Length: 303
Image 1: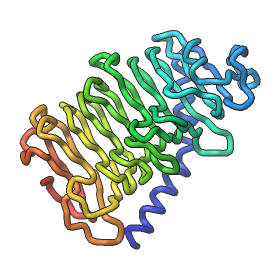
Image 2 (image 1 turned 45 degrees about the vertical axis):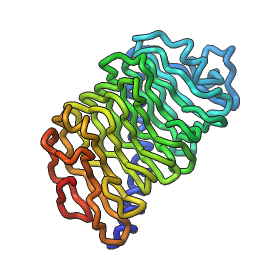
Image 3 (image 1 turned 90 degrees about the vertical axis):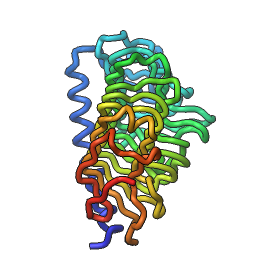
Image 4 (image 1 turned 180 degrees about the vertical axis):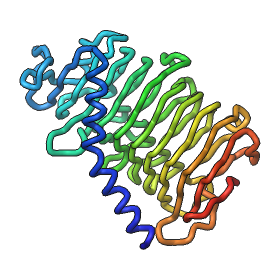
């Protein structure tokens, strides 16, 4: 079975499983005990109370205004149309879940050069969206207002699949996203730079079970630090025979160290990959643990 066919089969299985996963995520979120608001970007009204599907709000931004920080509130987005981006998420412990009836995800597309979500609160969950960001932005960006312990979770989303953006998820040079989990997301070839770009701090973060398909730059690019973090079970189909195209760690990330990188797979389509897909730019790997990471099915150490 060719590598290209395996990728098609893998992505098909991921899409097929999405509906079950996202419904489970909604159930888990609603069971948190907070208020649930519904948003429908075509027929909703921000004068509604948003508490039922029959009386939804028009915008995610207004739903966020109604949420209470720390209350474990949930926003269920049935469809989108009337948003102004970026949407600032400043309420802690809020869940924003896309559920588009008849489609696997709700599309959120920036008309201007902006992010879609700017996260500046702890314990934020985002799931169920297909994103398109501005030319110099990531779809989801963290700000310097997130505390040292972010505890966020981003899952079951697509970045750069059918829409564009510079990066999928970015932790800028002044920002923190400590203890954030990014899992079961898809990062595609319409991103012009990186899938996940960590310019500052994602200490104790977990990036696991994601698909990176022909991302232009680096799948997971750790330019800052991710001490005690985990990179596990991610799949990379690279657009070219590029060293470090799957995972690149800076010297700073390696010194901070103790990142556990395990069970990741990378290939270059149906062509044998010669370059090593994981690289530490400082030339040392003593600060991290690399375990069972495979290139074309064979375990290979980082360069």
